[in-house]
Image (cartoon, rainbow, N blue to C red; front, side, top):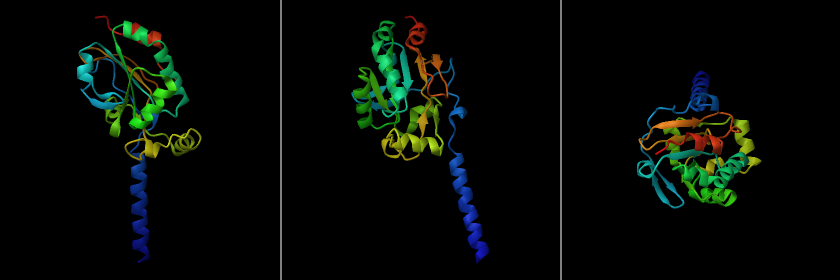
Length: 203
């Protein structure tokens, strides 16, 4: 009987360990590369449904992943993009920012950053998966985000796995191809408006 109990405990621990290992670390995410074609996707935003294919009919898309309204680095980055939004628009592109946070949290991001561009909800991390930017922070980091920064990751997202996107930036041309990216597992490193504008394809 004791052997059976011990065996069951070992199996349970093994399954738990396996489930923990199913999540990637930030440095294991690679992101889709320049030259790759992005599959069409749809997502809900504060102003309704966004579809990439339709958006590309109006010009290139600059897509920025951010972690959430609780992230001070994200808020600073999104605010800087808002400040120079006209430069991006004058270059012929549309700016889209996306996170795994539910719509009510998008509203908080908009209030904090004054963003007038489109903010999208990446339900079930589908778009983060599409761009290969999804990972899960370690337990200590998750606790810090939830307690110090009030991220509430388990409830703010569509599931309780507490995964996040690498805060990468992609420029997608009208053919759906990635023509430039800023991708860095270090969340402190973000795209610069000057680099974005210089890499938007000319019509």
